[in-house]
Image 1 (tube, rainbow, N blue to C red):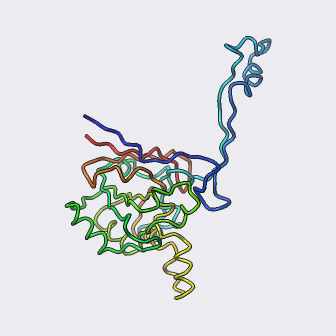
Image 2: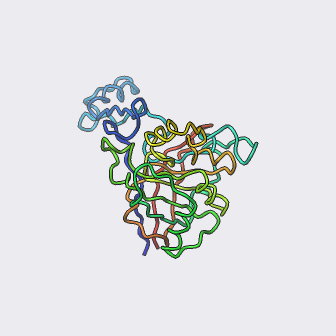
Image 3: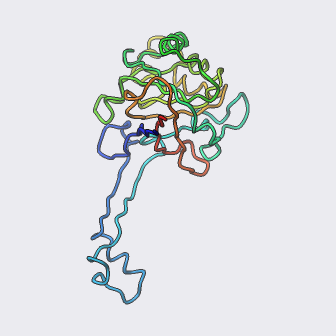
Length: 256
């Protein structure tokens, strides 16, 4: 029997889901607020002509394409991918990438700011008894997932480094995901490391791996802790926004 698990978080205003200046705003207009607008389309009609005097319920959203659970296109990371090719935008992402077998790597025990290595990935794959296959969707369960919307969310969880990302991509993975704000380690920890060593290569290193091998990742997933390590499919089709760097997705895991 098929079981569908929602692994998305709600697009919600008024919570600490993103850095200042990037959080969404949602204006909710209920049936009473829009009744006059509805009848304005029908000359001679009045609000009393509407069933119970109700218009329509709508919402107006001001948000980036990176709010809520979303799929990043390679264009988000750079103008180029696969060496010197033009990076594809979200409306160009192959849909076949977005509906594949899923694998969950449990990294909740790793400290905040830790940068995952290829050895960490291999050790976890060995622990769960899974051999990666081309186009597997790899989801990383971090300690950030349990803190979505809380004041410390942006600073929670580990990130996946450049070499670890390339380690997945070289095995044919083209979509990854995390329940943290970013695929990379939280910026506060990267900033501390940069201040100490002045190595600019650590800035957004997991994302920038897409310059070498184009890929997508899902950010701000939810409920990963309830998933098995493997034996499920992931569907994460993005909203088709013309020439955009990302698209919102109602990501789900499907267990048969």
